[in-house]
Amino acid sequence: MTLTVYELFTAKFEREPVVRQAVWQRWADMERVREAIGQDREPVFLKPTIGVRDGAVSRERLASFLREACAFRVPAVWFNDTESVTSDIGDFGFEFFSQDQPPAALRMQWSFDMPPEWRPIVEWHARLREFLEDCLADGRE
Image (tube, rainbow, N blue to C red; front, side):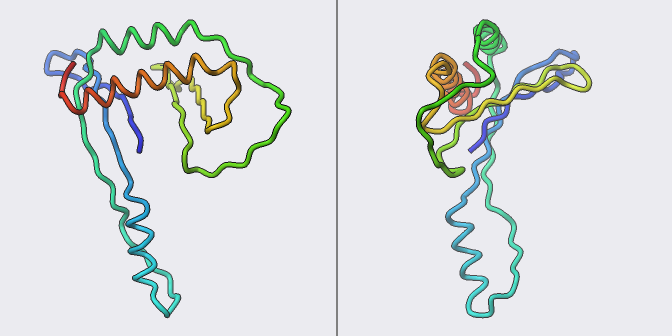
């Protein structure tokens, strides 16, 4: 599942933030591929099953989240005493793109084992995600 916030222009040329949720039905699609391949083991190409929903986002609330994120300070590298092996299942994170052309970009991704210094960002991310999911359910907050 991904949540993407982008801006649409209104008839008055004002920017309005919108959130889009895209959910890939991964396990169902994998089963469809297995069934389509059967015993022949021939390559099969099927369209993925992706559900999409959009919702309006409160510009003021979103700006409040972004201002809060401007104050974060995190190490660019860190050292751990343990090692962890994970898969793409259970990964969380976010990407931020500036409005510059070309944009500056920041990406953070973590799983169950994250640097302890990232805890404030992970907690912020959880609150942001909840806010955006509410925008999908309510239309506008």
